[in-house]
Length: 115
Length: 112
Image 1: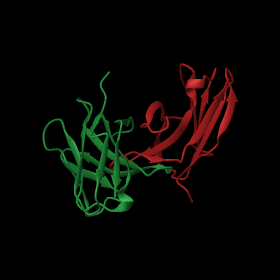
Image 2: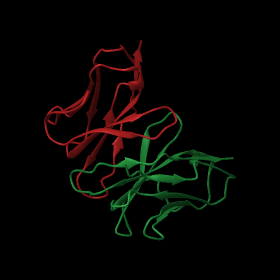
Image 3: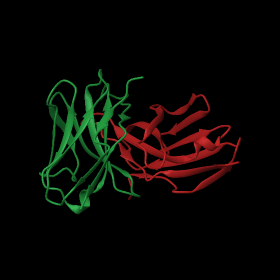
């Protein structure tokens, strides 16, 4: 069964450093998403992406964040200058469609630790 | 006002019993409703989606939606210890980026 994959599973970085989190969405899906979950808190939407453009972004997704689909399979989230409060699990998700029936499937996540 | 509300639990049920999980939402234009299961340290796993009022059954799971009351529930029949997890309710509206808005989740414990 197709699944979303993410690398790395765990990333440790120093505050102020840039990190890139990578995702390979399900192959026939057209809509891609990033969410994050701070330990003990709820899953929060960051950004959605379709047709090489951001469709929607949350208040969390400020100028320090960017997304890119550099090729036909990868979808990346870049944090330019990490802060301590960026420490969280980051989940990539994808869906086939954005109209009413929008089942989103999540990858296993990347645990980001900012020291 | 929280957008998606769930009782955090834990909800404890004996093995073989029915577990009932509830969720309310505040955005009346929400169109799509989902239940995800999340084991500790793992990612959300989609178990049910529902889009119209009424019941939707899939194996041991039944989702119920009442848009007038802004209420969605999940019933798990014949609960098993492997069902012990946190169940996340998520809603989205049609259009835009179709972001999912999650509740904080209800922790379910199925006891032997």
